[in-house]
Image (tube, rainbow, N blue to C red; front, side, top):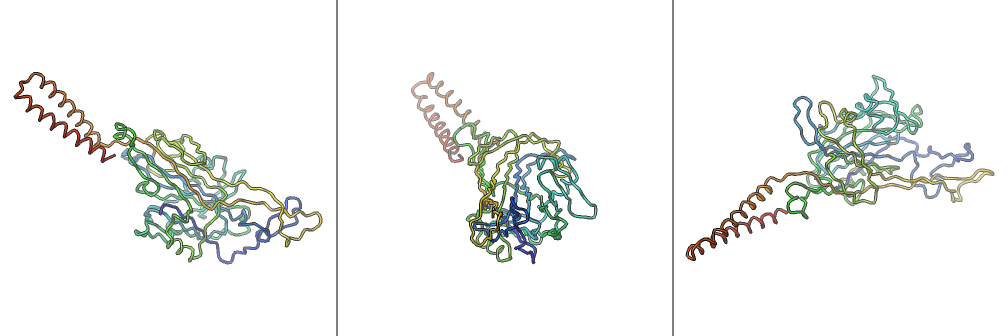
Length: 401
């Protein structure tokens, strides 16, 4: 089961009929969205999801030791009525693997602007566990998370799935936050990338396969066919539901020497990461050891304005019952392949042995020309033995491919 599952739950007692859509031609006329034909959800209840998948090298500032850094970041823009978020993750997660990023962003305005790619202002109160951030395009309540917000973190070995439930310990669905949305940003550390892809040696180049490998990534989000049926059933039984999205962003963060080949119909945009700005985002005490590139895929909906054809909608004189339609994004899938430097010392040693063996065979053949007939048969047997060893090495190399 390779798909990430994202579910949500609303605060109890939310008035689901209060959300109205104002007609653009007569602001005083408001038509309940639920009465409009073809409506699936209001724009107010749409999510925006951003995922960063990290595959890079970092070093500890204290001892300068470098090591691999595997992690997945989630950025969720949610309705204010969100009370809990549940994730189905296709790998093992422990509570200590969870790390909140909201506080880091609130403390570094330059980093906050870099993440949103526009000018953003942040307002904080020391005694509050949230920050108000806004730009010309949005206004969010950025909520800090901690272990106190995690109510469930259970891994099932049979389905290779972790259920992670995050609870909001505050209710932001209040009039004072009208016009804003809830924003969460957190990271989950990983041991590797096998949950999202398959690593293979380069098979079309006999020599290059000793020095390079490929990773084939198959990224899926809310693909119900690729989720554990029983885990999904459990989550939904506990009141969670699948969200719909306005936008889904996926970023693959990797070393600049790693080549990415897009296998999706979605366009891929790539840009260099500014290491000086992103050091703090990685966490305290660690920093990049090389230049990194962010590869970006985006899936979004395009809204449209149409006339409602529902006969139940009363049409007052001069009032045109327009509805703003938002196509639904239910899931996300992406395939891409990467090629990166990866020395296989076992294979390199085999190559060296083959080269030495070929030299020995050549020397033996030259020696045959100067020998008598009696000694010729002895050397011929030696050549055949060397050729047999060479064949065994080549067969071993083919097996490893």
